[in-house]
Length: 164
Image (cartoon, rainbow, N blue to C red; front, side):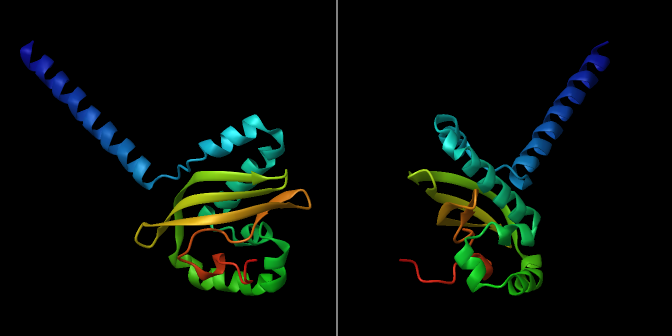
């Protein structure tokens, strides 16, 4: 009887260790953006529900490397300055070595009902590098779009015009 009990205890402990390790790996490697500030602002002001949706969709698309979709969520001036064909070519050439592993919204400032500035933390590969960026968003034609994407390891995410 003591042997069965000991084996059961060892089995339960082993399963606990394996479950902990598995969950830890999911948290480290998993896609788990921290967007609580976006949730809060969209709860308190329905004008910004679209902001939460469009920001999350944009970064989900970056994570999945859906380049055409990310291009279409950039400001009109960016799309004017940077033709889609060039963007897609650069993404195909250099984007295969890059990944957005996760992001966190650290701060949000809103202006009027159609402009917002986000300070974000990004974790990118290769190297699981952490970067921080200020990302400006504004509503154009009913959709929230950004000027610069935020992550810094891939040059096509940066804006091409001088900011003023």
